Length: 211
Figure (cartoon, helix red, strand yellow):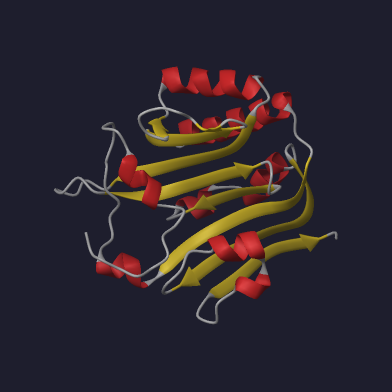
């Protein structure tokens, strides 16, 4: 693993806590670190979801992972009582965990969901790379979908935007390609243009503002 001052939060720091299934390291080779390239879709606005809509959205996200045969999937849940009080905050998204997630959503108490998917690149060190990062935050009125690699061309991001509208009434909805030497687009998505650093290159595919 290479040390770097890149801002990988909140994408990768929690992945260090993975508890045994799948890869436990994220590949950070120099050529990967030099340029961050991601396609992102997000909506910011007013939360309008309920437990039925949240469950439907989660099932759509899970279907996407299954459709692309992503196997190393992890999930992090926050309820109105805080992050799940277990040995580790992140859990491998197997059949048992999938059932538990649905049960949690049906209680109507889920405040935040983060879904990670990583790919095994077949490296002798066992390291893997992130390929999907999905978030829903009820309090912030924010839902995001990040995709890496050639899956950007296989993924209908307009469809992802429409799926997000189950949860959020949009004030801002946007799809863009992000390319930057030293930062992921988290701050830009969360705080807007004022947090856009000069080094970042954004190729905006779609943007609509209603506020």
